[in-house]
Image (cartoon, rainbow, N blue to C red):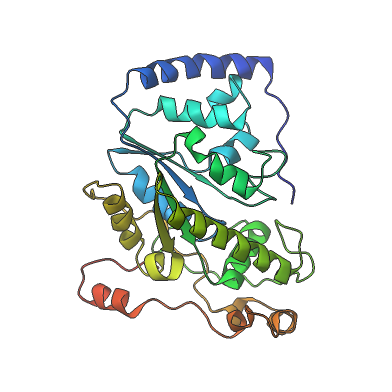
Length: 303
């Protein structure tokens, strides 16, 4: 699925957006000194929404989520001033009054690095992070690529992107196209190779340079079971005291892969003999230390 920009704003909407935007810029110019500019990289469907909603509740954090996705849909008042993605991110940063500003980006060639968005390769983007004023880099990974792809498929085909704690679970049976995967339009192994290559490049960048602080969070280890664990880690990373927050999202697909992926055997055949073969027989599990904390009621369980 291509990442195309929506048509330009109509004049009336343009004028309304411009009027709305000017006081935001003025407020940005008078804000306190910025303590940190945070960028979270992820491939989607890996806990970014639930973590972002927790961060947004912290009084010292302005969490702006996927700015470029909102740019694509013309949802931002700053789009009345510029459609240039770099300038748009800068304007969104200026409008924030909190000492910490954060946003998210999908570093994929068919998503936010595409010609319709930043139009650059991953190495080019990483080398220009200081132009975005980034001081802290977070990589939110999900090692189980098949589970992530299944979640993407459910989100797009069933229009189920999120749910709330306590909501009734619904079985969303799907079929994954192994030759033409959603979003990327690539065969499933090529898509997973793309994820693997990009993940390695991000980790190498984060651990070999010393100008931008780096933190990696993994979905199964740090979010599945309790997103509060990831929230606390990010607060520590930013040297902020964790605030009281309320969980607003819950896991959409609680069933095992075998229960809701109809063509699992076809996927096994496509991934047989590859480094991803294990994903067709092993599902994600809540870490034992998280279960122990849940039993001791020190953190809360996510549906």
